[in-house]
Image 1 (cartoon, rainbow, N blue to C red):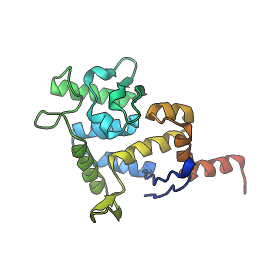
Image 2: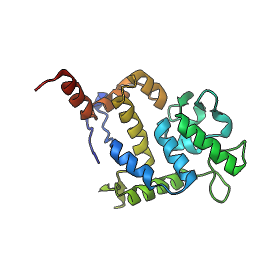
Image 3: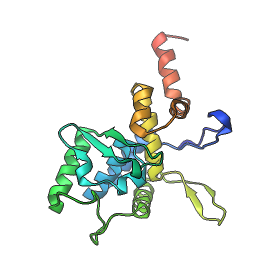
Length: 207
């Protein structure tokens, strides 16, 4: 697990961005033994959405035919609406999940008691599977002495961004997908992937 990125952003903004390698992401996926949980975690990764945006998603926000999910402005941190692309496999799993639930409207994800799933519940879910996969670590303590973990729902958002850039998705497209107001914010992530530098050198045949 990597812990990095300080002072790369403009105006002194500091942030420690944690993300999973592709091997770690695979381990996390393989640890999931519940279908609903699999859909949630895969959607977090595939969409790059914030966990708060996931819990507020409605079934009606999904355009299955086009492969998009609409995020209303009131559900976003920036208060700007956007449309996110979701992979076909994840969309098919969402369809199957809704078919099992026999639902066509309301919140996309519900708790086992039938209410809206909470942010806290998803945080606990991700923590549980990361621990099971053997990739969860403590990197520090908060002001109350509670452990700070490397793998959280927000880690999956960071992972989406880094992996998309590694896979050569144009940075402006990544910016729109995840809802960054400034391109400079997205550009920070390009510094996190040494694999990009290695690939460029190897391709050039540099010794």
